[in-house]
Image 1 (cartoon, rainbow, N blue to C red):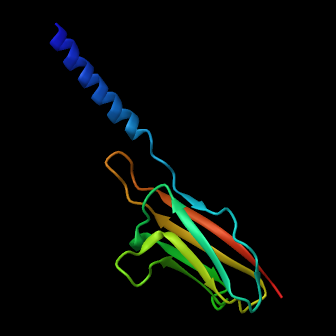
Image 2: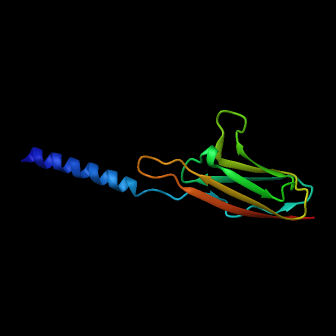
Image 3: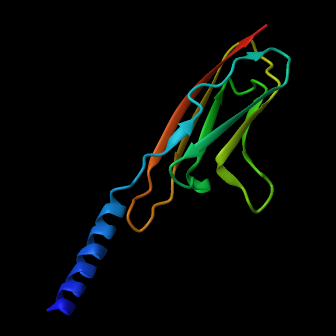
Amino acid sequence: MKKLRYHLMLIIGFFLTTVLTGCLCYKPEVRPKTLPNATLGNPYYAKIEVFGGVAIDRHFFYHIKPEKSGLELSPTDFGTEYVSYNDLEVKGTPKVAGTITIELFGVTYGTNTCPGRDFKKVYTIKVEE
């Protein structure tokens, strides 16, 4: 009887662990909430991080408007085999006054218990003269 109870407790413990682990699927979060403003003609640098999963490079897209704003977005360690689309850098020298908009779109890898999730973020940078 003790052996049966022991095995039953193991099975229940394994089942609960599996079920509860599956409930810990997080929605990806892009931080920071806002980017700092810029000054026309001065170098600009800001970091963006994606939390809650590993971003897939083939499913990562961005748009910077206006196109010839002078700013560019790139993943850290670009040009090496350890490129991370979870750690991004916005850098350059703003060439236009007004507003620069950066839109990010992406998907994270799934796991055995959680599907991959979409993320989207829009940043607005005000460029002052």
